[in-house]
Length: 238
Image 1 (cartoon, rainbow, N blue to C red):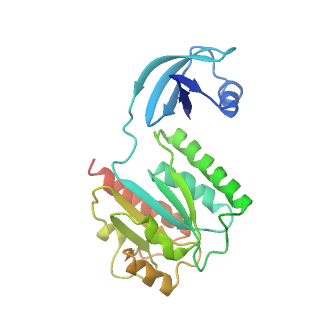
Image 2 (cartoon, one colour):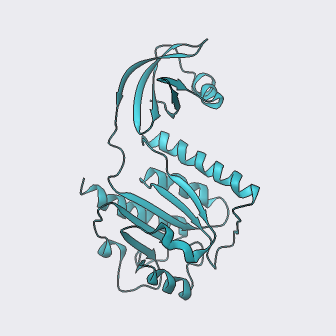
Image 3 (cartoon, rainbow, N blue to C red):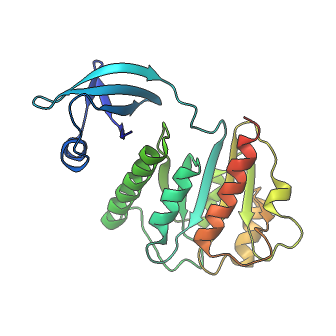
């Protein structure tokens, strides 16, 4: 079933022009077909009643069970190329609540918060997250933020914090995962990983160094592997 995040005003659904185009001209939705609208973490099941003017009949409303009970924050160092869009999509599907894009010493891509291109990219990334949330049946959209000072990673610390480090031989993420009351943060590097100084700083700020296995993973694979472990671990408690 088609699902869209929409605005509401006086119990009336407010759709963007892009959403109207998607419903009528891309998906070719017909009168009396059902759709789902999401607002404020609640799902509204509706029927398309008329096209001109566009109107809907409310059939049902409910709070879905698709969200994790725990907040996951992904701190991801900027990768090269188009990998980031893929990571945002998959992280959303795996239940992440916050995505923080981090500049580290080994990131090739550099950004500035004041750069108009960065602002537009963040809007694009937020849209990717929204579309992924709609596709996978979530009731919320992850927030996406940018952090260009690695030393400020503790601003996004949770109750349990981890940094994926390829030189960590003793502790694995699977072994170290603990059930928090509310939140987990995982920090994953871009191509080339982290410098020793960055790992040391992260450790000082409460991020535990963990291994993601005996093989060296690509950065985007590391994200999917780590988040799959965390999501699976948390869902076992639900």
